Length: 337
Image (cartoon, one colour):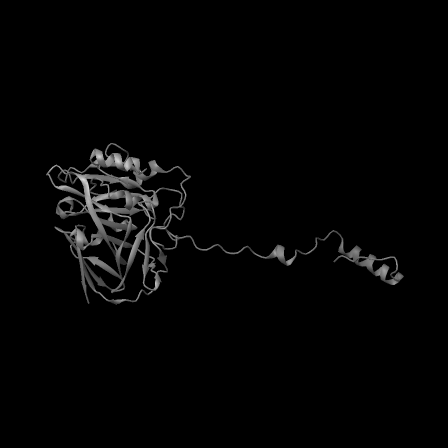
């Protein structure tokens, strides 16, 4: 306690002030209320590919690159390995009307993923928003040139973590130890990637019309989903039952598909998904579907979603994105209660 005296104070008050000062000794003044106020608690950190809070057994540090593995999605790929550890999966059209998967890994990086297959020009718009490194078996030279010009980083056979599984038949036998491959890409300075989707809370209710089943038709291949309990099951997955991707939402984006300008070894024209601009969107969550639109200002931009009422957010969780050709490009989507 500090007492200030003035010359005009009565002697008694002066004596009292001296006595109090002596009792106080060298004690520090109490901190002001501003000094003792605890700092504001920071908002929870979330994973960019799921929107979920970065806590628990997973490493919450976000100073490493996103890893994407190109995985075959035909009968020859069975059994697919590592999909259950992915944060997010994008299914895209390739030649012959079949599809290929771009599986994204960030919050968890497993040891074994595959079978690893080649890239397409469509991947520029898929991986660039989070500046991902792609694990791939390669690509046609024209595609490699375009990916390089777009600034996409990739690793392939001959790099750390890649090996052929002799129990499988080529070209479906290239596998990657993703944790080893990912360590080679770490520099300790990579900033947290932007959110891949406009995330809402995990317990958000999207509303919409009942839709317990859905089918995304790409031409020669259709991916079928059934809702039960808290998620969606891929009815015709090439992964074993306990290794399938645990989709909490399925996001269907209708896209324009053009010609990449070359053919595959079998003579099939290679398609290219135009993943920029805008198109129709269908968000399946909780056994219901909400209609809206998607937009991307450029191949590098994040996906934006809207309905007639405003922004559409995706409940935080694991999402499978279907890049289904629009009606003009030969694709279709159907769903039922």
